[in-house]
Image 1: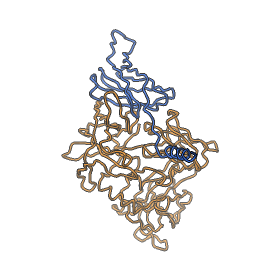
Image 2: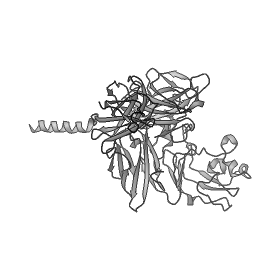
Image 3: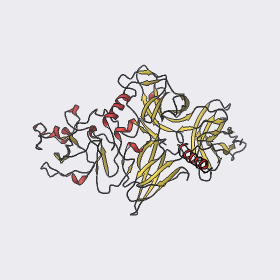
Image 4: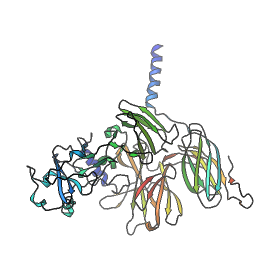
Length: 402
Length: 125
């Protein structure tokens, strides 16, 4: 992965001072990435094997700025002498840094003898040395974790089939900074179906999504207008060009040369949605609209919010951009008259505050974004949203793109 | 003369590459809005090539936005959307998803006692 960690960490550190951290993308929270990656390439995969501790040492793991490591589950053989077997996706299994677990010769440090796998793999706050297993993808036959930003690794098993969707952020015209450290360009499409496809999330206005597909002979969008997506064969696979922002969650059928069929959903989003419920303040949901830098500002758009209460009532609100942003350290609402903040590669953001009333009475809210300037006879156009719009579920605190 | 033609061809070629393709807003051809079983059904036809539409439901005076939906358009240029609203009189406006002139209809509560089987359809502008 062509990723300059130091540069991106600086970007994130700056942006972290501007935004609340709780975005609602379909990935786990990235936490604080390291300013400098001192990972030496050595780590143990540790797992519980019949209440004993089993492990396998890896010596040459690459850092995120080098590449994503890929390991087949059969490589994870037990070196502890307990003759254990790692069961794919089992509980109590995780990575620990070698320097925390064993000496240079590979002998487990005395302080871990007699401990259970659960105790060893506990977070540092609980006395363990488990690396935060932040997931950044994976699928039916793979697990993808970030290992506290030290390295990214995909463990896969027999049957794994992946395609590459933009193997570098350089492949994208736009790239939200929230995704920069959780970026997995290997998409596990194995054992997928039209109703349960693999999912790749991209920025809504990205002109072309580049699929690198080995052994795939056709890519066909399902259940959309025939003009909605243009699929063009490329040197390494297929390019997808979306011709309308309405089609923001399209399932594609991928046929392989061996007769197998796979399914991939391209989910396209331009929103960051987060709550801001705190004592003494009117409850609100904050909607960050990401748009191409230099082409708009907070006055360009309005958010159409449909607030749904637990009693089933719905209220539609047309919300203008606020002159504010929030500091992550103090949660302080800060004046921002320009209504514009940089929020990724070639992307700017503006924030919209949707007053919701009591969160106890809130089911959620739908959000569409429209361009300003409509009249009684003319519509100025939609920026984002399909059907009723992206739905923020107040219970799960996740965004569902309908 | 050949140089002039060559320049024009070059400029046109560059323009084709540099200037992003702009698409004209598509027209909504027809709109039919009716109240059925507590839902407002909105359907109609759009100009060929329309990919999606925006459906806006306003109050009777057309001043307050009460609901917004967007909907796909089929290869046959047909669109359909449903909006849940209490029984009442509404202005329904439909336009190309990317913007354009509205096509407007008014929907009113069905007079079920007088016309028990037919939904009350809105007019097409």
